[in-house]
Length: 404
Image 1 (cartoon, rainbow, N blue to C red):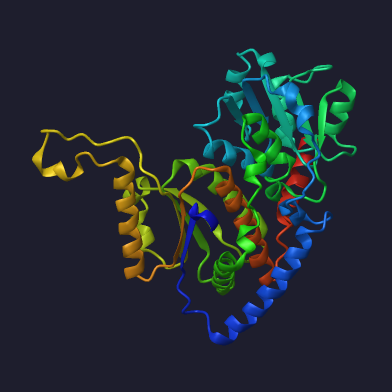
Image 2 (image 1 turned 90 degrees about the vertical axis):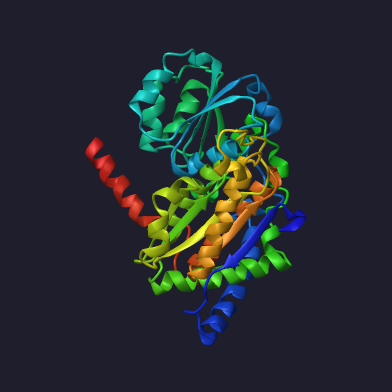
């Protein structure tokens, strides 16, 4: 990637990819790639969210009155909140405000939170449909809906749904959710950018280079990866995608990836099971399985290429461990990662490596867009609609029946 703030390496073994298949998938990739560029320029398509001229449904000046809040609580589920969590996690050391996330039905969290002064908290409530049962259950349990409340932002589609009706009845600040953009693709829209802006993140920098993955060398990496991943997925011999995470700042980004990949590709008896594995901790629990268990896995390795300030101080404690003295914790962690990669290569285990070298808005934006575009192309090459989630809708229908 440009400016060397995101280094990519593809070491996926391609022994199952014959030349005839490679040629066919290469042709299909180019056609889909061309279609995607057109969709990015079409404001009625989901991928328009990647357009540099994408129009937010909010204006910064309208949000200025909310900047005074030092505490923010986000209420949502899945794609309505995972992107904002990823952004907060990545920039947590820079963000000066206290941010809370209500992303599940957690009675203990609700009970404890209600003990505080909720009038000092800005609540951002997000649901595309405006009818997400868990989101509505949380806001009604918090008992925050009040007439003319000045500490609530509601984001949903502008139609006859519960959140929009609440905004009208109680005169609450409302932002329209783009009807063309589903939750897991919405992080770069108002769904992710509005909370990010109020956290103090520069959302324009975050979106500034999101189309880098379409350019020359980056396109070559994208094409190579897509063809190999699609081939492995459709062979059904590899169905586990393990995210080995050496960087705590990226953990919630990987949870965002997990939803994106699972919901977009898990159809027609196909798909990867994406799992987050925090390392080097999991070297001592799961690594044996990774290295010597079933060969049904592919790995994405994520790390942060920077030195930590924390140093190991052995002094005169024990001579046998003097090799650790004055080394940084990040140096030790990097040695473990390099050793793992070496063993992966020796054992012919397929992996890709993503090394972040800058804690910047631009690099996180690139990561979001790269995985969005890659997932969409893999879906289309595999004859899967990457934008729907029909099986999930069935569960929602049954849930509503049981609650009524």
